[in-house]
Amino acid sequence: MEYQALYRKYRPKTFDDVYGQKIIVQTLKNIIKNNKLTHAYLFIGPRGTGKTSIAKIFAKTINCLNSNDGISCEKCDICTNINNNENIDIIEMDAASNNGVDEIREIKNHVTLLPTVSKYKVYIIDEVHMLTTGAFNALLKTLEEPPKHVIFILATTEPHKIPLTIISRCQSFEFKPIPKNIIKERLNYICKKEKIKIDDKSLDLIAIDSNGGLRDAISMLDQLNAYSNGNIQFENVLLLNGRVSDDDLLEIINNIYDCNLNDVFKIIDKIDNDGKNFVYISEDMIKILRNELLNYQLNNSSKLIKKITKEKILDIILLINRSINDMKNSNDKRIFFDILILKIYEIINNNNKQTNVLLKNEISTGNKDDITKKIPVDNLKNDKKENNIDFSLYDDLMNIRLNNILATASKKDLVDYKEKLNSIDMEIINLDQLRIANILNDFDIKAASSSGIVLTTSSDNLIHDIYNELINVDKYITDILKRDIKVCVILIDEWNKKREVYIKKIKNKEKIEILEEKEILDKIINKFSNKSNEFDDLLEIGGE
Image (cartoon, rainbow, N blue to C red):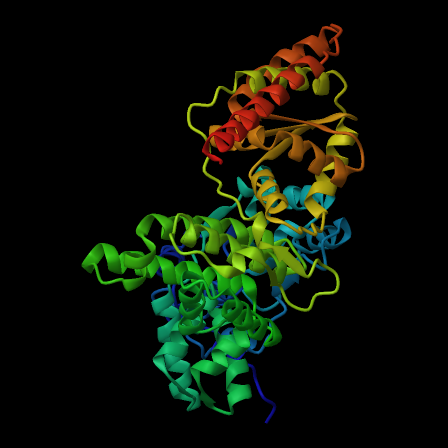
């Protein structure tokens, strides 16, 4: 007999078989029992949460000859034909590959025809957000006045891409990610049925890695079953999903605390050679640190928190979270992970009395031909900012830059800059560049001209971060965009107000004069230089 994938074998056939969508199931059953069918439904939710399966069950139940209490009988000819995919009145369509006007027009031409054997003709359109604008327009006309014998079920993972005119004509159901305990319960049931040996710890990890998608969890179980020949070990799960054990992660953290960076990078080299996923490893590191924090808060039992301190652990968690975004957008995740480790080292050992010999040297980041192989540890800096700094000069400079950019702003420059900044494969070779890249990731591009770019945020702290790095930020953006660029950063609320002022000026054809920024920029640079001189003087006083 031909092998059937587990996710197909254990796909629910009736509403009673559905896991994790109790509210949606009960609502649909009530609709059927009370005969309150509408012409169109929209199923929204992450992949693997049951949208298509429930759509098929719904289509079968409303056509079942002997349904009882909203449950199909599974015995009549209608149920049998639908289960065997032989009912021509249930039409499934994948909008990802059939997204044109012609496909929707074909539906429009056929909806007037009566069902062949069923009471209702049901169109299930999966990934409906993939339809073209023309196809949506054609579908809209069909949804406005459909025949009574036709029902549409639209399924999507990205509802924001569907026109509101379509959404407003559907009854919407939002599918939630399935809870971990329910996924685990279903996996355990399948393992017993299939006589698969697996421990509780492995089931937990599969459920976590599925991210609320039961189909993904069952597919993962199927793959592990094939690899382990029916006897799944926890190490098999780690191997498949690219993770490492909690013990390995704690060993990394403890070695960082003990200043054993060479041992840390030996572990990382092994992880890299084993093909592990550095994004998952970083996420797991956050979970471990979070659990340590909880243990500390609840029963004061965390040795890790006691020696590193709660404040530093919180800083590390925030740092890892920011670094994960960089890893996800990079083809070379190892370099970002290496730099992350160095930054964690900096946080843990900042203000510690002991001196590590390695700080005077360099740390190897592995055998990588396309990146710098050495990261100078001397580049590690304290990110603590001075208190009570007067940023008024910077604010004045930003007003000048905003004026000059908006005077010659163009949509072409905006689109061009967005594309380059979003697709750039950054080869970051030191922590200064990483710091700038991380800061810029939290800004939105709002306007651009041939000589400047406007970035917005809702955070004063991020604005001040840019001020502190302004010269380097200008150079960084200039290098990426291959032209001399002045960066303007502004709070989003201020941007919305000032944008309206400039729009009125442009509409009224008022001329916007280009302002000179050199004088105020020189003042900023001189102010910074004076601070450096004062610091040097202090060193002289303390010398011999």
